Image (cartoon, rainbow, N blue to C red; front, top):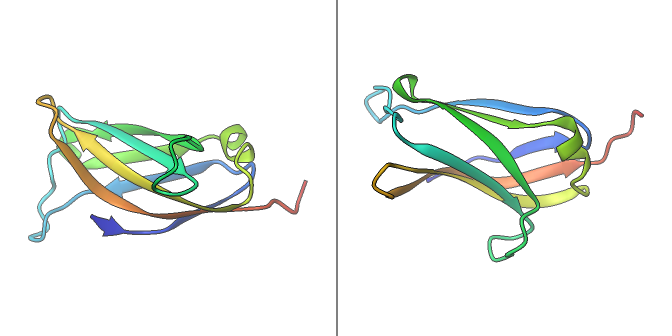
Length: 109
């Protein structure tokens, strides 16, 4: 799994496009997989802070992440953790990316 940190301001729309390639630079085909991305206070916390919406463009090896402004506004400012996993039709799970998810307070209202 690759470690990569994300951040968002309270009330900001969070959108990221992730491109998946292997070590040789070839696209990883994600067809037939579903994706889940959760934000929690810690990795051991049962309570879900937020769920990031994931859409997959399988043949292109792309996962789009999305959290709307109202959802980010509902997260108290602070440092959280997240990870992204995919699940294939047979139930095999693969974690690709994870790290810190920082939420900064908004100043401009």
